Image (cartoon, rainbow, N blue to C red; front, side, top):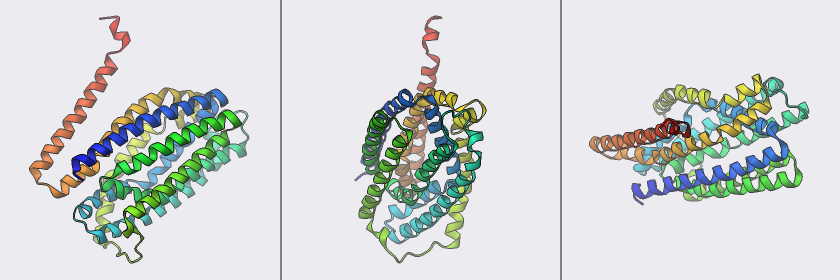
Length: 334
């Protein structure tokens, strides 16, 4: 399959996934607020952002390994791919352990982070947080394999499964809330659907890339490991900055004002985050295609693709800014 066909499938799959997941998540969020109120919505948003901050321990390892996979995949160097995936697996096991330790260390401070959680016993709050922590940690045992799909320009496989899983989860969460009117039922459905999706994807990827099951794998050399870690350090500060700017609002509001107010904030930021995710996913969908061009094409071709992508990004930014300025308030002055 050509790079253009892969890119088209990846982009379409990503766009459909983002739109449908956003719509069904909005329905589930609406049911959550109507049945249990803004407080639980605030807890949901706050704990989600706490785990996003804890994911900083990954520090861009996935980005670095993803970039390193482009060349061996283009050259069909299976042995090098296996070595990179083994390194990635070990790194993510360490990340999972680190997130678990740091996450558990935050347990005594939950009452400081989540203020005014009236009607929720301390043990219930801790149990909710532990469910969120588990839901984050276990994904690292599966996520590293998905990187191979992304680097191989096959993101649409993952998008198709994710669409079905997320829509099913949102529907079942809404039904569970309406029947049981219990937040733990809401969380339980989310964890169950996530586990089923990850196990299914894991088996699918193992069938797609059976060499991942090989027991004999050569470790990366020290120079290769150093090169990856150099890329990790290059990505690290960008990742930290992105999380600090975009993933901490709810935590700050919850700890300083109250969890009910943070629940209202989550509702207001839902649309802006949906637009942001939509645009980011378009570019992420073609990252592997660009990576393949970098390692296989001449400099002139690489430069042409870079200019096209730069123009496309600037064009999107221009339209977003224009829509921001051209508001109904401006019409009255027109």
